[in-house]
Length: 372
Image (cartoon, rainbow, N blue to C red; front, side):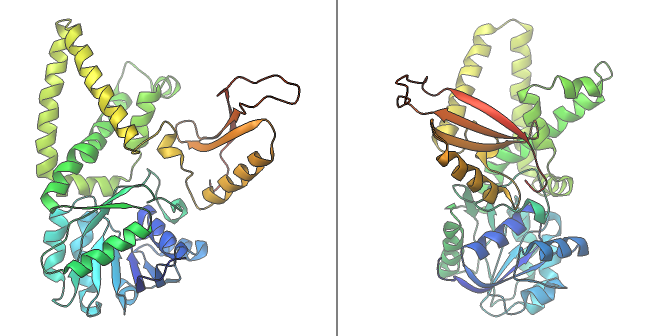
């Protein structure tokens, strides 16, 4: 277990990211104490029951008392309001950071409320699922993922290094860039794709010539991926689009132009143009996989929820005891609501002297249980 990097960490907002952050900070021993607060009394109660944090505070002001790190995990639309509320209670020398998907507007709204003796180091861990709430807290959620820091004026290199060290201890790679650059990059890699997903699923729901039951029954993999994205938290994404509107509209304009070109290619039977485009996009997909940013398993093969890691380890241990298999992969497929266990037959010869077919996979599905 690592040495604590902070004496007390306050987490404001106990949704998926806030709860996962608190859970993993505790798991790795990165803080002497983790205090949590959420605006919802029901969420506070559930977080206490699940032991997401060491202590659940009654108010945000109570949560940040004597904290040397304050993590804001609330929708970007209320970041400024929350910062204003907790500002008088922030300890001298404390660092305030966040997990918001928009940085320019967040800095503008938080910075005016931060006392001179408090550092502001905004951040954005690029991780998560469409699930929400304390029950969705996931051990290892940030491992192998990127976290982007966008330091604001007034913070020292030492402040940035402390926040960087925290995310690295959680398994994340850390990049530093300006808020403006972050918002432009995330507009095309995250925000516009979500907007397209919301639109496509909405279009399918509004079609009069196709019933909703047919949409569900015949949904192929591509559409299921869109529905997974479109299931993301409505409040969070409403705020993202409204607070990053300039970058989103810029990227959306470029997308609209490219979509018009694609329409023309289809209309005029431009097979060569379509083939060239699909070849280029296929290469990008391969680069993403090669960079370790994805794999074929849904959501990188991670389980979701508090019981996921324990269940996975239990299954893996059982697999090691089985004969005739050399690899075992466990994943959860959100599209079909099933857990998937894949067993690879061992390449070595069996006791009878016959050699099983290499890499022959037999997917076995089990119903998704409560809390998985």
